[in-house]
Image (cartoon, rainbow, N blue to C red; front, side, top):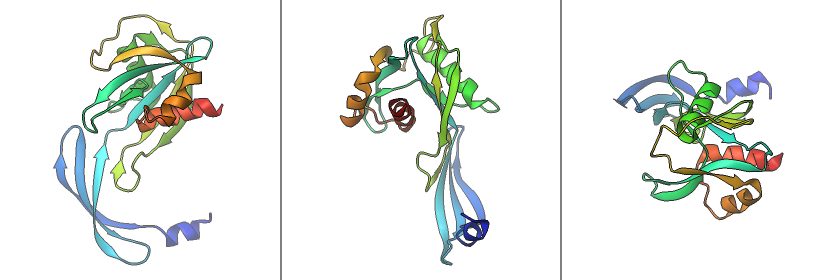
Length: 181
């Protein structure tokens, strides 16, 4: 795609104001003009960046996952370790830190999978996805509300996804990556 096409189809942001802010979320309204010339206010939501990591066992036949409840959508599902990236923290470091805090496993080698926006039309929240290998149990988990982690066979992952038992976007991206390799 050439840059003239990108310039022609770019949305113009004339400004943005905050409607609500907390350490967790910012709700805003942006004054925008679409490529077709329509000008209006568009809601925006800004969340902190997140990082998720698929921790594999030594044989790379199992992935470390937790079955847990999420109260906002009121669903139970399988998830990988992950969480928010602290300010000035490297996303890979955040993923490795979250794995240790939630599972007690220290990850050795880390592979970057992708960075994506889970709700790109209205929400700013980059999600960083990694695969961790050479994991070693070094401690008890320090976070007690993340569910109980267990080694799930990779051969079971496709069925978990197809049956709707994996709903977290970062977890889906990581697991689909593993299934595609």
